[in-house]
Image (cartoon, rainbow, N blue to C red; front, side, top):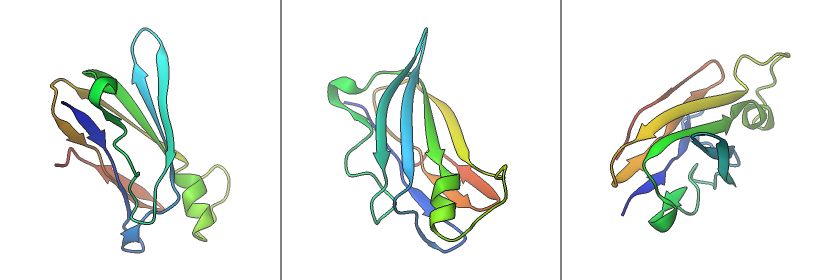
Length: 115
C-alpha cells in the first residue's frame, strides 16, 4: 500500500516548524482538496497525508503556508512577503511510500523525495 508523508524543518532556527498549515490537492481534470492540516511540535502531521484506499498514483500539490508560520515566529516581512505560500507539485507513479519534506528559511526553501 502507498502512503504520503511530509515534515517541515525551520533551517533558520534549526528546529521543526510547529503549527505550520499544509494543504494537499490532487490534480487532474479538476483540482481536488484532500487534506488541510497543521504540523505538530515535531514539524510533522499526526497521520500520513494519504494512505490505504485514499492513496492513488497521480499528480499532487502541497501548499505550505510559510508566510503565516514565519510571522508567528517573529519573522515579520513587509508585504508582499518574499515567501508566503510555497507550492510543491509532484507526481507519484508507484504504490510505495513517498516522503516530501520542506526545509524552510525566511528567504529560501528546498525539498526532495525522502524516505
